[in-house]
Length: 242
Image 1 (cartoon, helix red, strand yellow):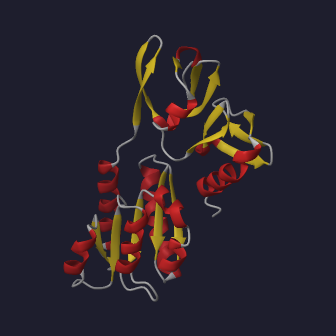
Image 2 (cartoon, rainbow, N blue to C red):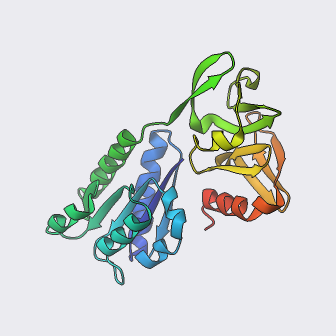
């Protein structure tokens, strides 16, 4: 799922901006979520969780922290962040070059839609669908990371449960600790035996996480007591509740 942070002190513009992106991503059949913030301070209050965003689109002239000031603070937490600036003016780009922006979007009705779509295309080219090569007991296989629903540990082996694939053929000798290092942040260790892809999570309770499986049925996984706070935070972030 593509996660985008929109930051502008005009709530109507935020709604418009989000709608353009959601429609365009739907046309491309790409899952996408836009989180909207009315100030740089509001965005930055998420702390380290801002590292989960694939793109930030910041209004240049916000009240409080400006777009550039917000970008500077984002880079302190997330040096590899991809940031675009939106503005009513043409003469801000010279200063903007210092912030390594991926795009500058001028808020003009005739051109903004197309410029925003070009920005999204650029991000998709920079971050194509992520794949991972699995070193399995019967050879190497390449899979889309987002198709991994969960990973389970069985003695000295781990097994990948992959959308549209037979898990019987996706086993390797390894540990979940080592596997975790290969995966994006939305894969969460919930128990000694399980890592789950939070994009498939449907509900959470104090001692279990419920996942939606390929068949449409649900499956519950135990949550270790000492991992609950982290799991709940990642679950809420994926759903857009925080």
